[in-house]
Image 1 (cartoon, helix red, strand yellow):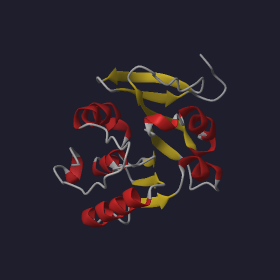
Image 2: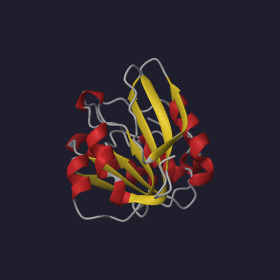
Image 3: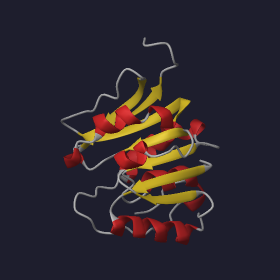
Amino acid sequence: MRIIGGRWRGTRLPVADSPGLRPTSDRVRETLFNWLGPMLPGARALDLFAGSGALGLEAVSRGAREALLVERDERLAGALDQAVAKLGAGDQVRVVRADALAFLAAPLHGRFDVVFLDPPFAAESWERVLGSLGPWLADDAWLYVESPAGAPVQAGPDWRLHRAGATRDARYALHRRRPRGRSG
């Protein structure tokens, strides 16, 4: 995996082999971060189901103030620790070894401006995670959701679709949190 933009552009990072791991492609990441560009400087990012860390690390490379990478697989979390060390990013990136749902049920680590939600497709965790995110979100948060191409995930009434796209294997969508008290 390589960082495709920002201060760490072109840096190759270790990725542990794990069944079901599908790092977000370079093309999709480039599109996503073009959409997010103006929102990233100074943002706090939460990368649930971090896997390769491609999304959270790319966010920090492109100006996010910090990222919290949540990964339950010990081998993947170890590779994330190596990547953070290689980048010298320990002051901005923290790896948490935890199941995403258990993590969201724990005490808050603050509110996040950008959340990346790309769970293993077979786990079908989107609905449960989306239902637990509320307290973790800044009022004007952004949410990236990646899902199987043939089964797009609806983010729910608290979100307004900003942009979406698809590849042969996945659908990706960026949503903006609706202002409180409005559903339209």
